[in-house]
Image 1 (cartoon, helix red, strand yellow):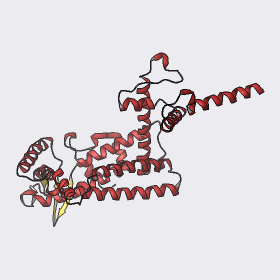
Image 2 (spheres, rainbow, N blue to C red):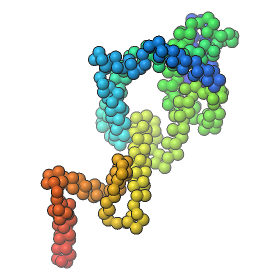
Image 3 (tube, rainbow, N blue to C red):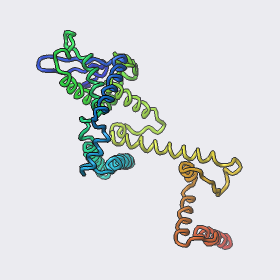
Length: 336
């Protein structure tokens, strides 16, 4: 598969006119100095009155270009996308529903991109951008070479090298998931794991770290007790949905276990117990102990209190239903 050798070596290669440029992986030593140098640039820019990202967002809000709720809107879209992916997985074998959900996921992603771009329209004029640019430009200057080994930054402007490097790593990072799924990569990964890379672990590139993350993810999928079908594994949206459903199941199981720990040992098999909760999390854990019948009783109690205020236990809807069921059961047994 294309780009696998680039990922293994960690080297980015591109062409400028007739020259080939190699950008080698950045050493931990170089990154240490780049951290220090870029922080200095950030601090100096801050003193000089350069905008922070928050300053830029406040300005955009003041001129009416950006909504005050933009950040919350982005989070809401991300929540919607997560729910849609879970639905996509649950309806995977219904092609009509699946396609409908996929179309709406794409629309949500488009909206997410629009809001994100609005929020960061002035990013290249902020202290944060200057810090990032200073960090990468220093590393690129020290690690860009011509084929003959000469330092490319002695001849080619840093900004040009920077732009071409960003273009390369964006392509590699976008392909990381597909690479991790490919047979050519898996054959190398299964036998060597992180040892497949030619550069040191301390100098792994962002693209390499991304493919490692995806490779470990797919390892965990194949090792799962609830491993999905190969069709679902091959469909990125469906597999994302499967992961979301699995995560939610584990979260519910954890809540139930935590809530059960709150029960005195002799009451763990009791029919109905009221437990005080000291926090919102404890309240959620306690609620998770209720089965469908228990949740229905709580819903009925809330309705009675909302409609009638203070109510005697004998007048609760759930109590009357219990008495009616007992009466019907006794009548049925009497007829026998």
